[in-house]
Length: 79
Image (cartoon, rainbow, N blue to C red; front, side, top):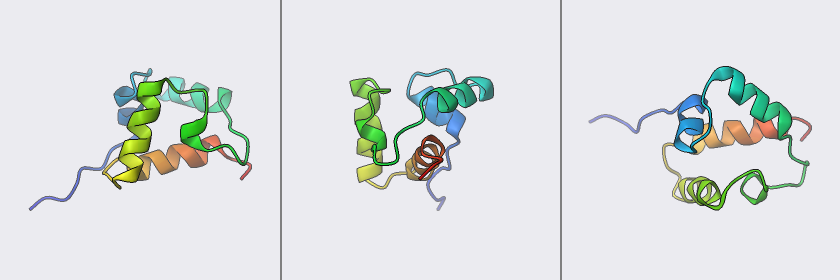
């Protein structure tokens, strides 16, 4: 039996309907730094459907959790 798939940040961005190239991801992260106390899913950088996807996948502790957490850390470098 195979375990859950491991997703990359590029696949997460594609799933969110965003440009998933390395350069675009780096630019997105640089442009959208979050305040220390701002929650990832509460940020206004997301559309409602993107926010729902992130929240649902996080809550069900799905295969996406690790890469969503990595994105969260990248958007909060000062935390």
